[in-house]
Image 1 (cartoon, rainbow, N blue to C red):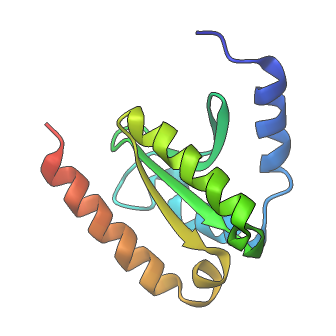
Image 2 (cartoon, rainbow, N blue to C red):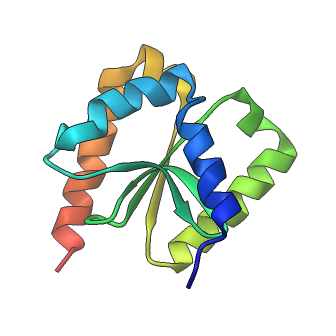
Length: 122
């Protein structure tokens, strides 16, 4: 399936306008710094663009700012998560303020998710 070039271009532009939380998370994940896993950022899984994606684990990491707390955003994120999970992916969400202020807690949770996914993968 060919991906819409406009979607790819938008994903590329999002890499250049990352939030502080996305920048910090990318520093922690890039170059296989977390559990020697390869992550991609602003990765297209049509029709969506996910913040971070690890193909090896089928893991999607989404970072949410306050705009994700509105009813419309909650509904959109729920549908999006259902779509991604239907593809067999695991979706985890962290609030930006937790990534920035409680990085150790986020990384501990991510390590726990990694451990669970490693046990269930073939």
